[in-house]
Length: 235
Image 1 (tube, rainbow, N blue to C red):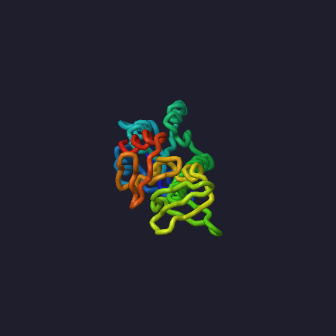
Image 2 (spheres, rainbow, N blue to C red; image 1 turned 90 degrees about the vertical axis):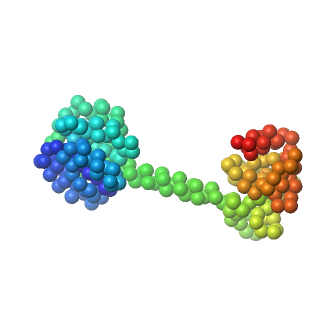
């Protein structure tokens, strides 16, 4: 986890540098003696965590944090406890009052590390969910087939079965209802246009009166679905 220190007191900088060197998951990018120097570093480097004093000449730690459009995590390190409320209102990870003992510094660093891990897990989960949404599995005959959503042109409902038409010549036949497959597909790129048809918006060649043309197939637009379909393609 890449971090910087901002403090106008040389002894405070030296102490925090020593603390950081003892924590394996922290990597000190640089130490800054004022806010102006720190803002330059923050523009040029990807920083995960800031340790900053509050009362400094010209540019306070609070001013630094407020000036950032994209805020890394930050911990206030200060001799004054009365800034604590404002610090937490800015969503500080922690608030350390000088003189700072190592065990208290370690607790703040660990809290930041846990927060970063949680954020990365949430991002990973989102990406996995996004990737999973690009395909579905359907049972056909004696196997579960993986179908890429982009390949689906349209789906036709029969009685107890549906036919899924993809880029291959032969449709995939599976025991399923149109309602169930509609829920699987989502509504971003697919739309129900008839009691017996769901179409991919991507594969529509043209719309002729009350029919949709996909390849050579003329798919009827049901009266109960027409308004929503027109709104979708015009939107």
